[in-house]
Image 1 (cartoon, rainbow, N blue to C red):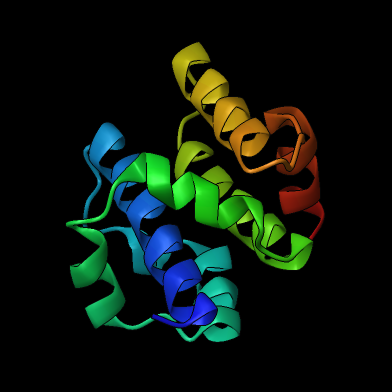
Image 2 (cartoon, one colour):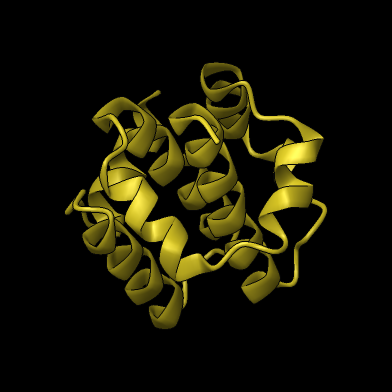
Length: 119
């Protein structure tokens, strides 16, 4: 498996986990930053299918080595999911910051939300 394919599957695995936690498994296309992430990474439906059998923990290891531009697009996409709430629950904010720290992209939810709103 190529590194690009590993990164795509890892991203899809993390996104599936986030969507599952939110009960929004079909809403990925509605996220405005997902379109940029999908285009930059060339994500396909088969990547999501392969990601269903991948481990989130092993995906985080793959994402640690990913380029910072891709990490930012992932962060913005996850932020899109969470910002659908008027008040983002604390557990989602903690999950976001845990994810970002795990992939060595220490950015807070507040910072990414500010960036997201200015784009």
